[in-house]
Amino acid sequence: QQQVKQSPQSLIVQKGGISIINCAYENTAFDYFPWYQQFPGKGPALLIAIRPDVSEKKEGRFTISFNKSAKQFSLHIMDSQPGDSATYFCAATGGYNKLIFGAGTRLAVHP
Amino acid sequence: EAGVVQSPRYKIIEKKQPVAFWCNPISGHNTLYWYLQNLGQGPELLIRYENEEAVDDSQLPKDRFSAERLKGVDSTLKIQPAELGDSAVYLCASSLGGPGANVLTFGAGSRLTVL
Image 1 (cartoon, rainbow over the protein chains, first blue to last red):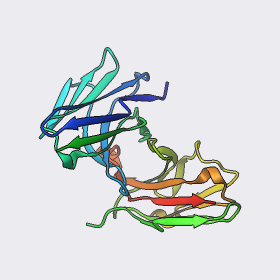
Image 2 (cartoon, chains in turn yellow, brown):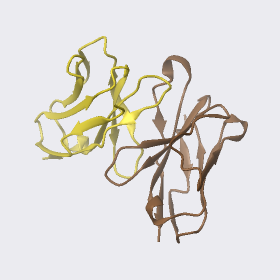
Image 3 (cartoon, each protein chain N blue to C red):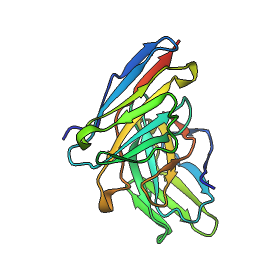
């Protein structure tokens, strides 16, 4: 019940395309859903986050879509750029600051 | 503002040897975390501190792992003795309390290789 399942494991997108990464969770007590971006040799960095009282949040080219009834949320990267090539992790927490991370999606954006 | 600082960045040791990692969190961040990241996996929480108190260490293998956060600032994570399966990246993160509690800032990590 503590798992966050993330797909796909890897993703290749052409420059200018849309990258979509999906996550699903079981624990209905989760109330905060961040996405982290990690470049090789670096620690994860917070990219964007959402709470379940809204269905969508957009920051620049990055959008989180949230479906509370399906217990799913996704990250959309519009106009994907080679600089977006990184590993993306979804996460969830229901309090006590204990973030549960997905397994990650390795995104490659080809020029 | 300096981020979360970790050292060493890389460590190679033989099995059964001890190893220690150090973390300096962002100034003013009361909450400090140690995460384990295996290759190709997401980070997994090992221990969380609120100031100098370890409030969640349920995932810390206490037979060989120990951690401390003296004076509620810097923290050290120790493994003794190290095993081959401990090869991973050890990430430190910190956060504010209150409304900022869920916003974690990670360090670059300490990559451990056990031979």
